[in-house]
Length: 300
Image 1 (tube, rainbow, N blue to C red):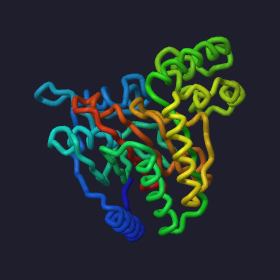
Image 2: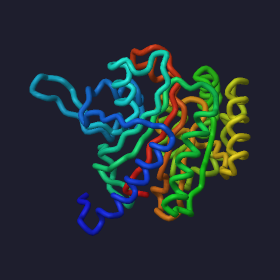
Image 3: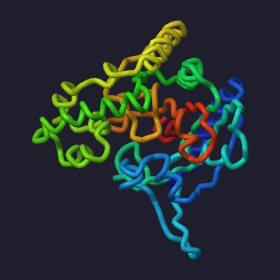
């Protein structure tokens, strides 16, 4: 979509507020290329996610390399951090802004080339950094006068706890197989957690009655989540716990969150993120804590 001269001032205003805000929190800009090796996204986002299965713009260039227009920024940011030695035994607060690409069904609030602002933090353990990135986004809404937004939070626990929970979830979903739509039946064997995130109202009753991940958290993740809630309460940031919030990318663990508005119809998420403590190691770096978010600028 074109951004026409009459719309540019609104973009400049939003971008200038974002620059002001990130500078005040001590974040530095990083700029990554728009085209990356396809394997980067398959390894980070997950082979059986909607993005990798259906939405990436991938092509083979003249050198027979498989390349992809970036569908999101976190994987590229981690790749750059590993490649340039920014992450090991260091703490980083980084931000980026630019176009992302997904071949989604065009509908209100969705473009195949869309702009994201994202920030990533590395090397911080504990819930303080989760609270920081949420508080930063909450401050943005105040700065630009966005009022009809709701913060939804959940915990995905550790990878081990999640795997144990998946077994229980799959058992339950198989018992209710006939009630699942075709998409969820397909996901059952490949990515069962995503069934919880269905937007199909006909499946609401099945999903609501499913076992809750929150009830199967490991002790450390449960404690992390309690502290997160306490710190958000202390800052006066209202939130709703959404037990079906799982995010569509494989790399998340522990805290996940979304800012949602009712003013955009079905595409109501304007900002989403969480922790991804295993991603740096997964992409070949030394184990490093990670947490961040991305926001869709067109929607905002």
